[in-house]
Each structure stands twice: as C-alpha cells, then as structure tokens.
Amino acid sequence: MKTSFTYGAGMALASALLVFALYFLGFHSDAAKFPTGQKIQMIAGIVILVGGLVLGIRARRDETPADEPFGYGKALGAGTLIALFSSLLGAVFTFIYASFINPGFQEVLVRSEIAKLEAKNLPADAIEGAEKFIRMMSNPAVSMVAGFIFGFIMSFIAALIVAAFIKRSAQVQPPPLATA
Image 1 (cartoon, rainbow, N blue to C red):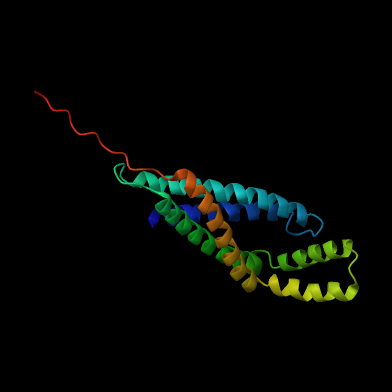
Image 2 (cartoon, helix red, strand yellow):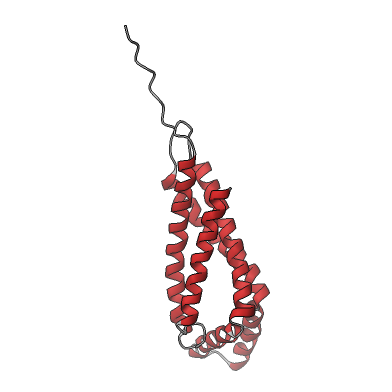
C-alpha cells in the first residue's frame, strides 16, 4: 500500500506542477490561450498517467518475491490503488487550486467554453442555458468530485492496459543437482 500511495502521490504532484506551469505561463488566465493549455495538459497528463502507472506497478512487482507470481490481477490491483490515490489527491488539489490559488479560473473556463459555443453559431438562449450548466460544473466543489470520478475511471482504464504488460509469472527454481 505504501508503494501505491507513493506513486499515486507522485502522479498527483507531477500533475499539480503541470497545472502551476500552465498557470504561470498564462494559459489559465486568458480565455484565448485556454484551449491550447487544455491540449498541453491532456497530452502531458497522459504521459504522467502512463509513466506513473508503469513505474508504480513495476515497483510493486519488484517487491514481490521472484518465486511468487505477479499476475494480471495483482498488477491490476496495484494499478488500481495507484489510480485511487492519484485521483483522490488530484481532486483535493483541484479544489484548492480553483478556490484559493486561482479563483478566477472558473471565469476563464466559462469564457473559453462560451467562445467555442459562439463559434458554432448557436442561438443566444442555447448559449445562456449552457452557461448555467458550465458555471455549475466548474464550481470548485463540483469540479473536485467530478475530477475524482473521471480521473479514477480514466486511470483505471489505463491500469487495465498497463497491467497486461507488467505482469510476471513465478520463476521456478530448479532443484539442486545431486552430487555423487
């Protein structure tokens, strides 16, 4: 469990550092730059997710004695725990970030999404209705819960795939040679 927490916390920390980098580079304060920041965050987030799961599951596998199997189930279990801790810590960071570090983040997100809707030439009443929903979903508390659920589901799906490549069969020790 300690290994899973360590790698889950590492993934959450790496994701938080990515968010801070985007914040300091202005991608979270300008609605025009926000879509580019989202693309950067998505690509880097996938790298963090897969890299963290691979390293964490391998570390858990290395803790298992070589004569014991570390099959798909154990690999998936390790990946699931890493995903759980990463998602939980990431959700807490999301709440802190949106509430205290960058309280204007919600407004930037709303303006960016409205600009996308306006580019599609939607009627004003449809945009107004969508704005209410976007504001509700971008509330820090709602973002925290949704981020945890979505983050865990995506991390679990990645763990399903990564575990298939990290599993290991038990290494059978040959019997000692008889000496005559």
